[in-house]
Amino acid sequence: MRYDVGDDEGDGGPWPAFADLLAATTLLFLILFAALAVPAIQRAGQADAQASNLARIEQVLAGSADRRVSVQRVGDYVLVRIAEEATFPRNEYALARLKPEGRAILHGFGRFLSGGLVNEIDQVQVVGHTSSEGSEERNWGLSAARAATVALFLIDSAGVPACRVSAVGRSHYYPVRPDRARAGAEADPADRRIELEIRPQLPGDTVQRRRRGACVESRR
Image 1 (cartoon, rainbow, N blue to C red):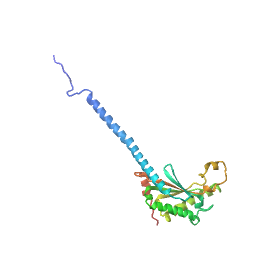
Image 2 (tube, one colour):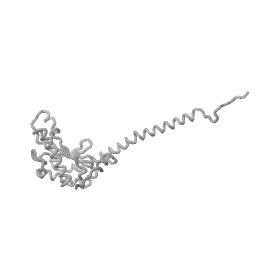
Image 3 (cartoon, rainbow, N blue to C red):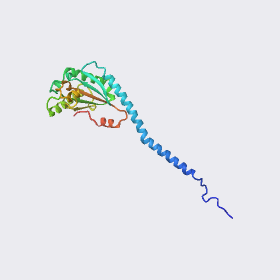
Image 4 (cartoon, rainbow, N blue to C red):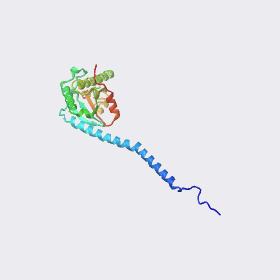
C-alpha cells in the first residue's frame, strides 16, 4: 500500500503566509508614519523657527525707550503700537499731517529692519484705528487711509521692501479699553492709533514663499 505524505512539494505550512502578512503590516506602518509623523515633525520645526524669529523681533524692537511706542508678542506675531499723540491729528490722514514724532518712530523701525531684521519678517501689516466719533463710513475710510499713508511712508521713506508691507483699516471696532467702550463711555482719543503687526518668516513655508515670490516691487 502506498501513502502520499504530501501533495504540495515545498509547502512550509502557515509560516510563509505569516511572514508575508508581517512584511505588509510593517510596510503599512511605515507609510502611515511618513504620512502623519513626518509632517508633524516638520510643523514642530517650523513652530520652533517661528518662536525663535518672534523672540528676535520682539527683542530688537523692544529696545525703544519712546513712551509712545509699546511692543508685545500677540500669538504668532509681534504687535508694535504707536500712540495717538505720535500719529495724526483728529480727522487727518495725509502724509503732510503725520506728526514728527511718528516720522521719527517709523524711521527708527526702518533702521531696525535694515539691520538684518527684514530677512526674518514675512509681513508688516499696518493697521489704522479711529475713535468712536463720527459716522461708520467716515471711520472706515479714515482708518484705512491712515494705514495706507503709514504703509507708503515705510516703503518710500523708511526703506521697507514693498512686498513686506500691507495696510488695513479697522475703524473704531478695536478700542484700547474695550470694557470702557462697552459701558458706553465717551470717545477715547487713545483709540486713534497706528499698529504694526509683524509676522515672522517660517523657514520652509511654501505658502509664504510663494506669496512673496508673486509680488512685483518695481514701479513703472
